[in-house]
Image (cartoon, rainbow, N blue to C red; front, side, top):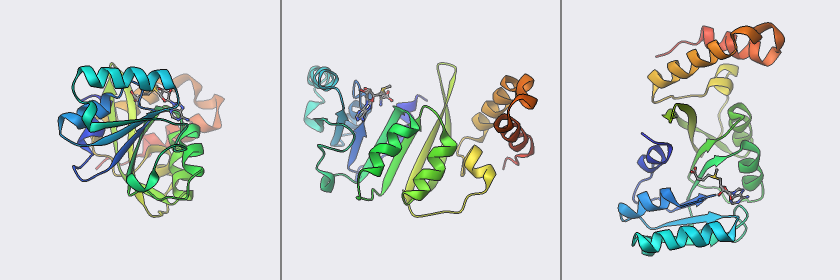
Length: 205
Ligand SMILES: C[S@@+](CC[C@H](N)C(=O)[O-])C[C@H]1O[C@@H](n2cnc3c(N)ncnc32)[C@H](O)[C@@H]1O
């Protein structure tokens, strides 16, 4: 399963989705094929123009509303209840969410980095983890995190490795990959030491 298919599987027909940083609007296309109207935005005008032209040629344009926007700046927020941030960094995602008071019922992220910082700061913004899923696409591991409204108290283990993992097989595979990757760096960094210790003591259900 690809990253965008995994996100698509988490969208219900009644969700009103904005895909922030849509690039070629692949997700919008998948939603359109299900007959789900959705919004797709990007900070770059030429990217939105190209995505719109592609949607026209695939006849999915009537399902997708395209917006040029830095984060949520030009978005009619009253029309949206679900946000997707895929392929963006944690600090970009947090900066965008920090600029709005609106609370979204569902936020799905596949951040490029710093998932521990994302988990902590989403909690500070009023969102807790509903479920997580590791995805492997083209040999690379990705962390999908679905957030819901509410706060949670996380253990250090949950901050570092996540919570409510739905694909434990791939979580084990990713953790084993990290253990091999960090094998020679255990004594060279406190954060690597902590992560390796947490992985070694992790109880998979
Ligand atoms: C790596 S692409 C990811 C595309 C797609 N979401 C995916 O996962 O395949 C990141 C996209 O985010 C857009 N982007 C970066 N910062 C943004 C911001 N502040 N607001 C909206 N879009 C942004 C970029 O222009 C780029 O198209």
